[in-house]
Length: 110
Image (tube, rainbow, N blue to C red; front, side, top):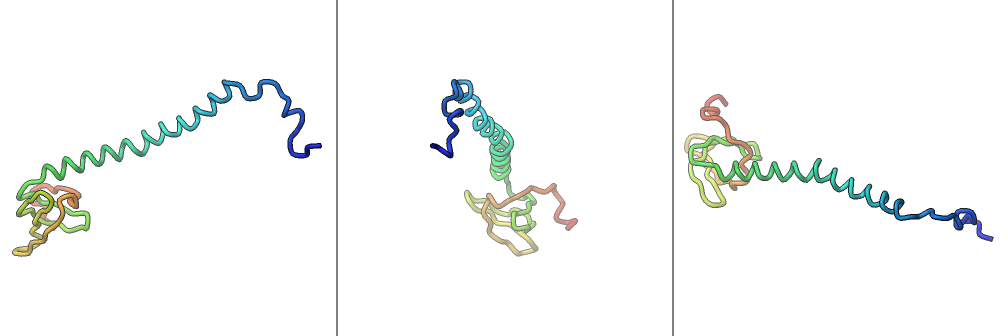
C-alpha cells in the first residue's frame, strides 16, 4: 500500500545501468570545462598582461591609475611610484594601481 512509489517503476529491470551513470557525470564535467574556457582562462590572461604592464613601468611614462588620475611617473620603487599630476604636485601610488600607459605627449592634450 505505497502511495508514493509506483510498484511498476520499483521493479523495472536495468533502469540505472552503467551507461546512465556515465551520462550523469558528463554534464557536470562539461559545465566545468565550459566555465574554465569562458571565465577562468581569460581572467588569468588579463592578470598576466597587467603584471607585464606594471613590471614594464619606467620613469617618464605617462599613465592613468584605476582611480582616474593621469600623470607622469617621476620615481619608482618596488611597491610604490611617485606620479606628477601637475607642475610641482606629486602623489604616491601603488604600482599595481596603474591601469594603462599612455603614449608620450598625451598629457599635454588633456
